[in-house]
Image (cartoon, rainbow, N blue to C red; front, side):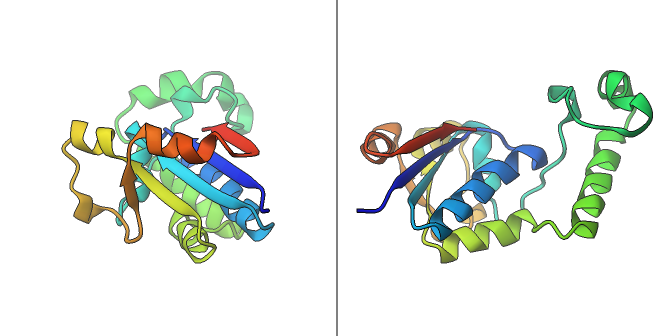
Length: 158
């Protein structure tokens, strides 16, 4: 019987988009049965055209050059356009280092039969348009996800 990995994805930013897709695709490649339950802001990761940005304010551990990590996340983001600039810089660095895009990682997950479940309650709460989401997404409540998570070998909250 295959091991199971259950992931709950709650964040909708560029830096928080990578962990669920990297862990899910890796586990699936290792033979795990994998489900990701996307809820609240994590639903942004399922959009066909995700507009994800870096969130340095919520991550004081983000490494930055010239000691900027000590002051920039707080002071720098007060300036208009800084978050967009930091997002662009991060995307360029990821491309230069050969890091797969979120869209590529999602496709890997899809090909590996990772089950992606959108929280129905959150979709309804925020009046989200299902046509904005990628194909293959299933919709269910927390109880349905617990059917899988309750039997999983590993359960992660991201």
